[in-house]
Length: 331
Image (tube, rainbow, N blue to C red; front, side, top):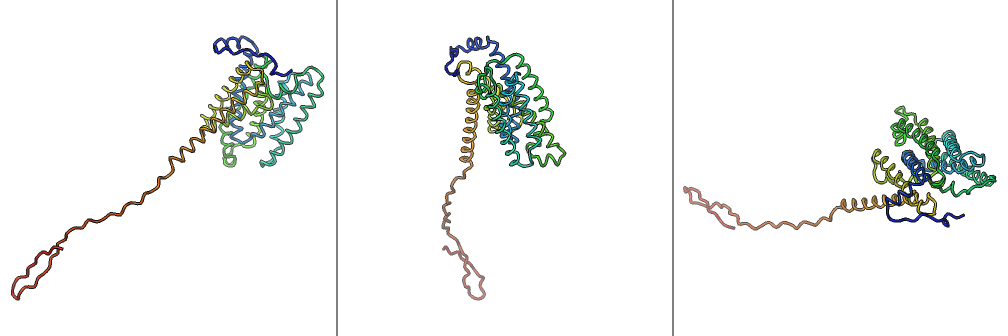
C-alpha cells in the first residue's frame, strides 16, 4: 500500500490543541523521545565526521544498516539489533583494513558498501513472512517505536556521548592536524578506531528515524551548516546539536500530518537550513569585497605659486672718498 493513499490527521492551526492531540498517542511520544536522543548523538558525532572529512565512510556505515536490519528480520530478531550489530562491525572492518591514504580508504569503503547493499536485498528476497518492504528500512518511519527501543537508544546514546566527551579534545587535535598530533604523542590511530566505532553506533541510531539512506540528514547536514556559519569549535558544535534537534522535531510534526515518509521531511528541513547558511556566507563575502575595494584615486591639481614682488638691493657706485649707499629696486 502506498503511504500517500492513507488518511492523515488534519492541521487545525491551533498549535496547542494540535500538539496535545499528537502527544496523546504513545507511539508519537516515543517517536519524539527517540528523535531527541538520535538528534543529539548524531549531531555530536557528525560534527567530527565533517571535520575529519569522513563523510564517505559515514555513508558506507549507514548503507550497511540496511542489510543489518533485513538480516535481523530474516533471523527472527528485532531490526534494532541488526542495525547496531552490522554498523559497528562494518566500522571495525573499515578501521582494521583501511590503508594510509585516502585512495585506499575510498576503495575499501566503496567495495564494502556495494557488497552489503546487495546482501540486504537478498535477505529481503529470502524472507517469506509479512514485511513492509525495504521502504521503511531505507527511508525511516516513526511508527512502531516502542518504549524499550527508546530505552535502548538512550543507553547507547549516553555511552557514545560519554566516550566522545573523554576523547573529544585529543580527537579534535588529531582531526585538525594528525601529523603534529602524532608528533606530540597523541594516539591518532587508536582515536580513529574508537571514533569509527562511535560512528557505527550513532549511525545505527539515526537509521531508525531517517532510514539507512538518509542518515546524512542528521549526521552531516547540520554539522556542515554549523561549520559554514562559524569556525569556533564550541559554538559550531552547539549549533549543530540545535539544528539537528530542530530538524528532527519539525520533521516528526510535519510527518504526523502528512502521509509521506519521515526521512523526506527531516532531510528537506535540514537541507533548507544549509542553503540559508550558504546564502548568508555568499552575501557576507560579497559585502566584504565591496567594502574592501579601494576607491579610485583622483589626480591632484598642480599648485600654482603666487607671484610676489621681491626687493633686491643693488650697490651703486660712489665717488672716491664717499661712503657706499644702497637703494631698493622693485622688480
